[in-house]
Image (cartoon, rainbow, N blue to C red; front, side, top):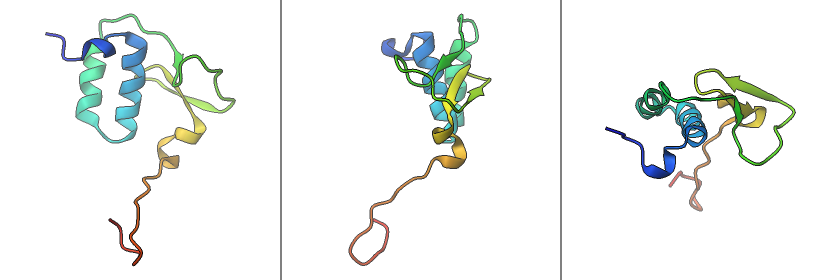
Length: 89
């Protein structure tokens, strides 16, 4: 049984989804994608399709995706909106 929606049954799209899920600590979902990709033909791809690769990137070897340095896990910041009293909402 194929667990991915039809729109994601394209290996490059699934590769990108897998690396993004990994970066936001959605390991179980990333594992579903990795398992689906296990018997698919994959290739090294950039995170963003149709654009030139950034000068600085790192290859995520599990999903074969070049991730721009600006999107490496240590650079991802979650921004919370704040109310006027300065407390997170």
